[in-house]
Length: 64
Image (cartoon, rainbow, N blue to C red; front, side, top):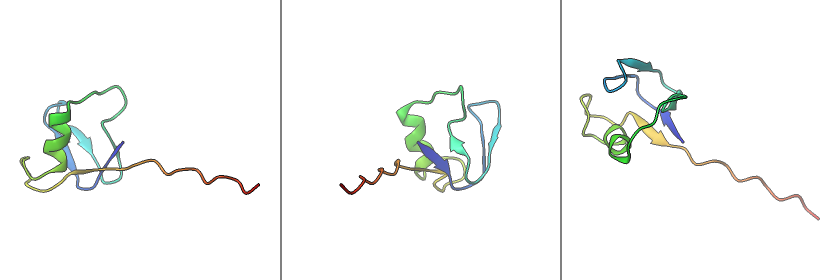
């Protein structure tokens, strides 16, 4: 899962607006690994990372 860390309009999704904290991609949208790399790196029109990967938290095991 990815979270938006910098506001942007997705030019490959009819200008869909992503606000800080939004999940990327939005429901119903699929993207390529290349697009993820572009938005997570510096090789996009804003020149800054726009999204970051968020790994799910592991549930703590109950003490027996």
